[in-house]
Amino acid sequence: MSGMVVVTDDNFEREVIHSRLPVVVDFTAEWCAPCRITEPILKELSQKLDGRVKFAKVEVDSADRTTRAYGIHSIPTYLFVVEGKEKGREIGPVEPAEFRSILKRYFDFARSPR
Image (cartoon, rainbow, N blue to C red; front, side, top):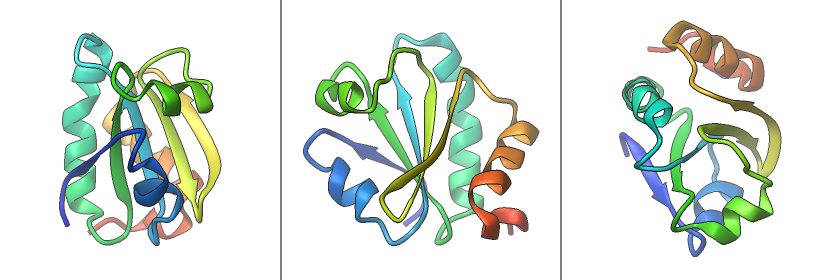
């Protein structure tokens, strides 16, 4: 599966917590300009790291239960989840090179993207 998975309150646990792959969870909204700027970066990385990292997109306006449960107050916010546990989070737009460095920090095997 290539690309970003849309995650809702109903499928968050299945797609993120029980994922066999590490997951980058992008908390976003259509009206968020910084989120729109970062979206192409995430799509590109999701294709390059297909099969090694899952990229999940959570629309905060329609997934309020999940948004509240994770204490999301600013967007974009990125959660880095491994084996159901949050390894870290980043807040605000991120440049492509910086995002790759962040992935390396949280996901050891992502050091050599295809």
